[in-house]
Image 1 (cartoon, one colour):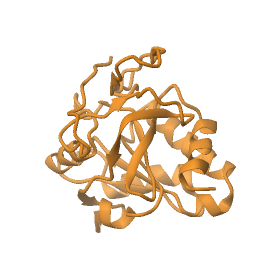
Image 2: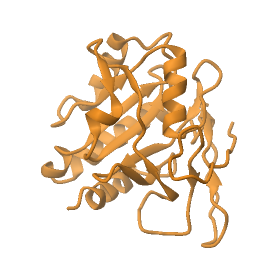
Image 3: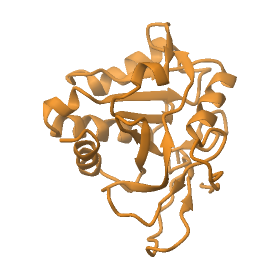
Length: 222
């Protein structure tokens, strides 16, 4: 999957070029979308990447506020994303458990990154995986899937599901492209929010576990 899942290579951009839109990738085309220009990007789509080069990942043209949405976690309980993760480094990703490539690769890269950084940093970081296929990804299915990646980490991954409308609203709140094709065509962007509840950096299929680890160190203040 790509930033919307159907993978494409991210073109190199000159320093003053307009930011490219987020991409959808369909576990196995891509489309761009423009950001709405506001600081709160609910209902808009993040722009990548800005002219800065502060991070190993994608420097976002504008910081993204930590979104507010409530879904159901793997225990069946309500999970208020903003309240539960406020003030801590948080990685947010939208995908689905039957994805053959980008989703498991992204989860594996995050897991490797968290094993690479100092344990004091890993203990701060929360990874939240929101399914784009809620018809298939029940709490139980999400729990089993994420357990393949986080078993030995100090903080377990959080998996979230809900109704189709709730998942749509979560994507709108986060400012990522809306998933299509029953969730199979989805954003491949991994957003990293800091303690200030803003995301200045994100990652896509062109980034590595090393890139994630580097920026976790920076965002977590180590």
